[in-house]
Amino acid sequence: MLTAEEIHEIKEEFHLYPYKQAACIEALKVVQKHRRWVSDENVKDLAGLLEMSAEEIDSVATFYNLIYRKPVGKYVILLCDSVSCYIMGYETVLQHLERTLGIKYGETTKDDRFTMLPVPCLGTCDHAPAMMVGKDLYRDLTPEKIDEILNSYK
Amino acid sequence: MERPLTKNIRPDGKPVFIKEYESLGGYQSVKKALKMQPKEVTELVKKSNLKGRGGAGFNTGLKWSFVPMEGEFEHKYLVANGDEMEPGTFKDRLLIEGDPHQLIEGMIVTAFAIQADEGYIFIRGEYAYAADVVAKALAEAYEAGYLGSNIMKTGYKFNLHLHTSVGRYICGEETALLNSLEGKRANPRAKPPFPQVSGLFGQPTIVNNIETLCNIPHIINNGVEWYNGLSLTPGDGGTKLFGASGKVKKPGLWELPFGVTLRELLEDYAGGMQDGLKFKGCLPGGASTDFLVAEHLDIKMDYASVAAAGSRLGTGTMIVLDDKTCPVGMVLNLEHFFAQESCGFCTPCREGLPWTEKILRKIEEGKGEMKDLDILQFHTKFMGPGNTFCALAPGAMAPLQSALKYFREDFELHIKEHKCSWK
Image (tube, rainbow over all chains, first blue to last red; front, side, top):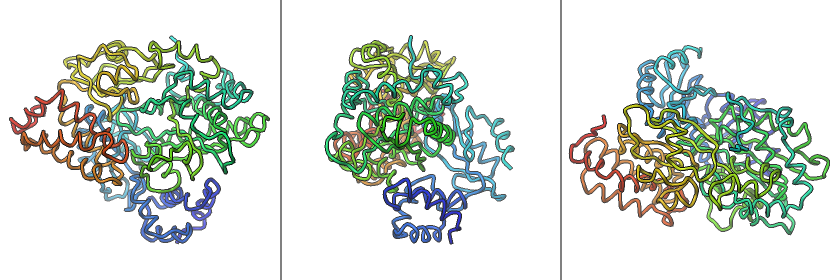
């Protein structure tokens, strides 16, 4: 069941579009904001609200890599694996994150704190390698810097 | 040297908000443009030789002129494309985060020229800070009467909204972006009809890149002659944000006239290669442009000169390859990106790009055969311009075909030695 708050926030988005199906992505974002990810049940509930089929909504949800259809931890780490970060050695950063957190891409730490995913170019290539933790961007990464960053997320 | 686009941007990149922006001469072009006829604004921009800064390089005023100016429409839309996801590109972020009102001002004037009443600023989901900055700037612009139903009491109406996206490179393709704004999967649309005639929700629509829109206030304020005078290349108006990433001494972003040479960019601005490294090549304008190599260092950085050298100016932000980084590994990284980001709609792209990636991985891991190079070569034709639904796969083939041309011996070395000698 979607909460009253979620339904209210989704309905607010309807005003921005000529018909409510166009708010599909916004609706998925609202659900994810409240629940970290979007479950099968949420997809079905959204289908009712937006008067679309669940399959149609899922076809949108699974297209976009920043909509999570599996549970994620409290903070999602998005590590840039594109070309400038490749040249500047993101693979060392990845190995350090894997060792420190004990997880690989797509996995979540046991304490439910971090999920790690690769992401295409973060658009800060003059400060590669780069990653995001939640909404925060970190650049010129080194193993020492990463330890400090991870410790600041409780 | 004048730097209109970045003149307000602080060294620390902290945003310039409305009071400061107005004190620096902001929003003057709106006052000026609203006293003109919409068609005069379009004509001025056409003559300015401003070309689309998202990579295609099409005359902006000409693009606007395809929007029907007669007849009744439910709405006309203007969309700012801030989906900056071309690997190696980091220019629009600076403009959005550092000077958000310059973008809004450019959009108001553009909307007036095409008589749009609704607009969206489409920003990629990862640019969370940029989105916060834009949200605040939009609220300020409404409050000051630059946006809304009676702009500066002239009766002109333009509502502008922020849309934050949720990933996928293909959203940068303008028709895919429109599908995404409509809440759908971001598959590109067939053209014609072009968005100028039937775009967002079936209404006339212009999609322009962020950097393109940021040029508009300066053209209106200072005129066509001044604008063309900024450039060293006749036919390419204005300045360009150029950038460099990779193992150069000073990676960064600089606003410079069209027509600076690649060598000046690399040596004078990026400070040359890091100690102990040599320049092997570069992708001059993002991941989907062909490699240029040492023999091209003296070419001028403008649309025609880079095209004559066999590449594209693209986004103007180059990715530099040094002699200690494996060129096969670099191309593999690029093709992995393109294979992953294919929207999956048309067969050559959906099937061909993962195939290309697999062969490159095989070669990089020392398991390649000479005939694999022929298959790669075949793919560069098979997925070249005209054979796929949109420009994603041809873009993906650009670095591959040029790598096969300039770095063929490096591919062959992997195959002969059964390993990557750069590791």
